[in-house]
Length: 589
Image 1 (cartoon, rainbow, N blue to C red):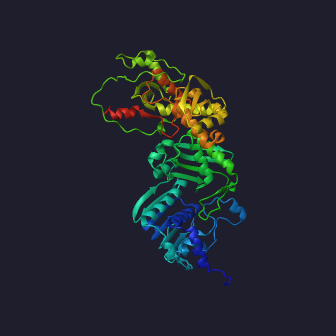
Image 2: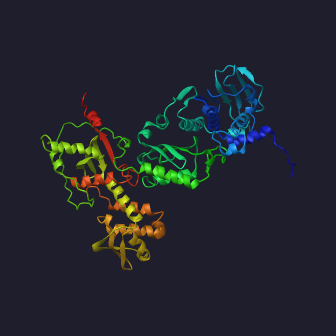
Image 3: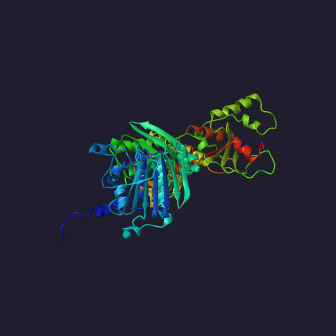
């Protein structure tokens, strides 16, 4: 066996570089964090060939004294901690003292700096080895670091780097994360001599809009919740802005971008009731807490954290975001996605409301509105004062009052802001779903016996499931009894679903019970089952509603949590303002 010996310092640094400096983006992240820790208010970044050929970061921070330039490039040299107590309460972004040494070991590095109050600036250079002596240089203030030819002396690592475009994409993402964390700092980014970003010092909302897009900012809700020493701020997008991937998820703990399973699970749970399971939410959120309550020294890249009380953090994040998303119908009209302008009509015509669909029994919404006022809307006569007064009352109801039904699918309503369009099935589905959840939580799901039991053919497994889980079925309002070895009869259904097809409801419930078992269906699979039932119980397309029924649905939406989205994350209503309508018809031009 070969003798045990100490490794050379350079080799140690190159080994460490493999963990700390995985690619140009990793080096850029470390340099930007150093600039922020130095108190910089303006940071300029220049990249060439995705950061592989050149990476230059210039800031106006506190700078480094000439006598400390050499030690700044040494391993485990830092000004940010001095003891274990400091490490356990670290508030700076960097603290290990490995980054500059690791970068210097695998690249040609030039460090120029002018400390606050110093008469002159000095620089130091290294060519993948030991740094030279500090030399005078010209620099107004702060620090400038140039990193050239990354991995020039470790070809085995360099060959694993991707194309210039890929490496630039990762570097830009690292820049975006740092810029999102500090909107009070001005940033600029150039790549191959072309300006890519120029961000002034601004508020968080403007910075988020500049980096994540105006569409995200327009479809996002602002959050500012505090409890027990924890504070959550930022913006979280409405479910309608959901994504196919996790590319628009940014979470920061004390200003540090992190990816943490506990955090991701809490946020996912908060979106569970309003987002389709194959979609991903979009958010930019900032958690602030005592640094002593979170350990950031658990990953070489400092991208993972460990909380002292993970359960408390999980509950706080879940409830804070869930509260924000639980707005009632009409509470966030400005955040609803904007509609494209339709083609202008060739002539003005009075609307005609008619349909060939046979009348169906009214849905049980239980709220009535007077319809006399709506008759006036189709008459060519001035509105009396009583009608005008009723129009003014629309301000008290965000979703306004119904005017008509469009193609048996949409409700048209007017409110104080203009025109409201409601997807009646999606909206009623949410209303029924929330009612079912509340009833089941209170163990008070009302059952509606059927005058004539609904019989249907079933396989032996469904018949066995109906007998085995009879108690669970009664708990959710069903009574299903075997008629024969191959048929079942539905004798009662939940009262909220009395207009749905009882046989199809029974099949769906039995399928869930067979696949997951009663205990899981009534706990972790509860919302999925209730969502399916609500879809069956909601009013269907081409169902003709009276004005009274449409208004009843609007009032229900205004008192139902999360009524802005259906159970699958689709929006339930849109607002078109009077200004937008005037623009469509070129009024005032």
